[in-house]
Length: 322
Image 1 (cartoon, rainbow, N blue to C red):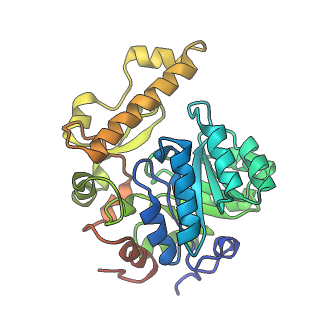
Image 2: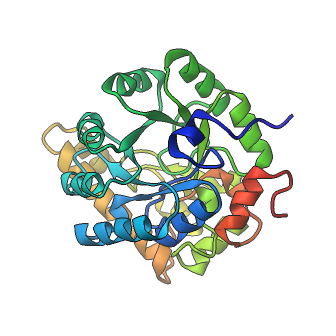
């Protein structure tokens, strides 16, 4: 018997299906989120996808005028994001429907967002941290499990979701491992109130990245996903291309030393993040042999490049768009 698609997440946001098109660095854009909303789900864009605050403001205004449904913005809330406070101010002033916080304390974000009537969902990888953000007043938890793309967690969704349901009293959104109807049903059966899905949306018509990146999502499989610390200083999933094999996935001894040094840690982490993001940008938008493509193991479910609406159908109906 299929699990009902009416959950606390669908009721909270007023969406048809309990699915968030996950915010993906460089990949998520206005066109993808509009297509997601038109398909009965919601979507979010990382604020860092916009070089300036003015570009972020324009994107939010466009979505508010052209989307007949909710959308969100993802904020990096630690010290590596020098634009955090300006981004938060714009999101609150323009009243996006929800914010997703990553990589830092969400306390200030929750306080400012709630003043503006904006909901806050927090990325978590442990039960202890989930309880902390719930105590701070967040509206939902995004449970980042070990099948997630980008900065993955350490626990499977099958173990993590029941642990969170037992410890917390707010909606739990599972992030990682969902790529088709069957995998969505399995996660909802564990007690999740929704899912956050990213990698399978990279190979879509609406995604702004180059055809090589999209085709890699089709051609590579889950077994080709590896963790690297070279992009942000924290473990991040990428496709194991020949270039990744050439440069390795671990920081060198000097980088590791500087990351642990109290005096230099903050600046080293910021430098690593900026350098890594520039390398990802080059690979996503221009021809280069330095193919650093971020993705998660759910690329296993991708067999061709197609519109966002067909990816949503793949998730919500048996046999999907196949």
